Image 1 (tube, rainbow, N blue to C red):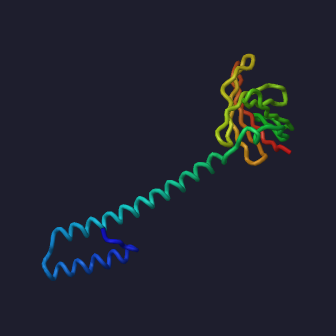
Image 2 (image 1 turned 45 degrees about the vertical axis):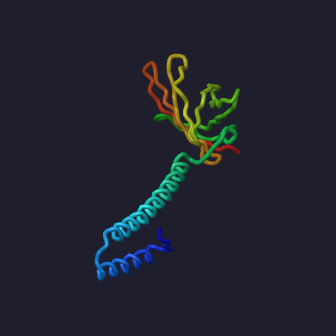
Image 3 (image 1 turned 135 degrees about the vertical axis):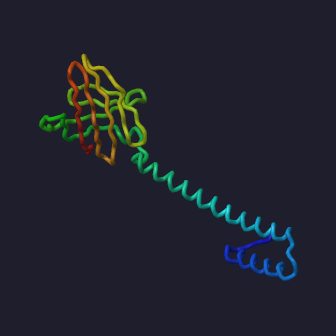
Length: 167
């Protein structure tokens, strides 16, 4: 295999060899080698481009997930504003606690919701509260917690939001 430093040097060598062969008579084996060599270089460049693209897309996913958050990032009390469909917003405190390796969100009324985390995003599975059920999602952006919960049951269908900051 012939060593080449750059694509332009490869093309120059290819043109020079092609013209030499054309003037002295075409040699099929050499032409096959030349075309094969150029094809290999092009494939290597395409592979490198694909790897760089995948690396960039991998980083983009991390940014979409809100980065990397761990349990200690969530734990604490958040003070902010809550509002439910059509109601006047009100001041509220939400606490996230860790018990036995699991996170729980405790609202102003003392109701506890188990949390699942994925990066800086949180979700709570559907839980039953008396005659209704609730589930929700949220995210942590630095020290700001944003949540959205849906409560359904017994003719009730409300969604509530909370946005608060941890000191």
